[in-house]
Length: 149
Image: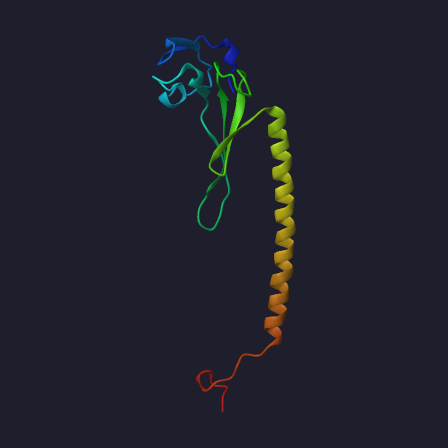
């Protein structure tokens, strides 16, 4: 992420409650209308980075499992306040995270990965048991397969 303290960019956002508002714009901000919400309320002005997408390969493609972006809301009165934070999209909703929150999320995802490995081992056991049982039974006989009466 670029050093946003050295940015000299500003953007003027027309708002419905405070008129034109000029704000400093971090280097990492995409500067799109979605973030700046022209004509909205001043408290809704936000700076947002491009999304970081976390994907997995599956037999049906590469879905996005988790999406995250840097965000800052210079006029908010709600947590996490005026400082930049990471907004993480999970299950269709966005959740603000500070650096400690991201570390806890990482730990949780690591625990989930460990659990998936345990489940993979369990699946191996089930598959091996299934293969052993299948080998122990003979195929039914019938006139069609040449083994019948």
